[in-house]
Image 1 (cartoon, rainbow, N blue to C red):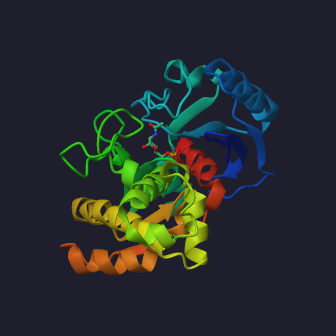
Image 2: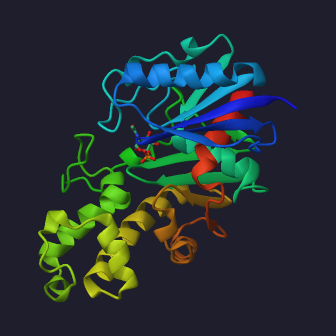
Length: 303
Ligand code: BMX
């Protein structure tokens, strides 16, 4: 069976391991910190690939950002990526096939092959982390769009009247409301607007000092302000997901990413099925966890 080196380039760490054609990890998963400059990222990737060169046929890379149609570069320039990252030609890393794909598209491929989406025909993947990413696989094929950048759903506008600036510089992108960063934004706004804040365990904090972790912790402790902030965040998530359901008519929506354990999938499934024109949609939590990027990149690199 063919083997690929799957590499997941995250904001803080790079994860890598050998993956077979069934999407199974067949080596130890290793990790290293993500260097801060584009040049250093390139050298680190080269070292990792050289180390495994003789064991593999292809290399699959998962990265945040919009990827070009040739799967050789990450073009997106959101502030989440270092300067010069969009200049890297990943195909120059070695003389074997090197295939780079967006992190959410990779997570979609991993879940479709070997995770919560296995056995479904049309899978919509939503990753909720610092930003929000999306991917769709239907009839076994990843939907890439004209230039390969389809499903950059985090940039979808949810309001038209410039209410909140996003880290990308534009206004009212879905991810500024419904990602991990979005939860923090809801907390800051809620501290100024909700009367519950005055009785909250966080009442002595400045509104912009309240973290995503404070809210998830506050919910466990029954803090009314944290619960209200969380419910607002879930509403924003629902608003985006119900539209995406009407657009893509998925069999299931798989939620992954660092924030996925906090998402109320049952509530979302109920509301989406009640209010979308599409029915019988399942909302599931991803099962490939931290290995999603690595597995999906490898699966897609096999082609
Ligand atoms: C952003 C965008 C997407 C990415 C998504 C999730 C960049 C750098 N990122 O919308 O390409 O899929 O975030 O990324 O343009 P994460 O890092 O939050 O998982």
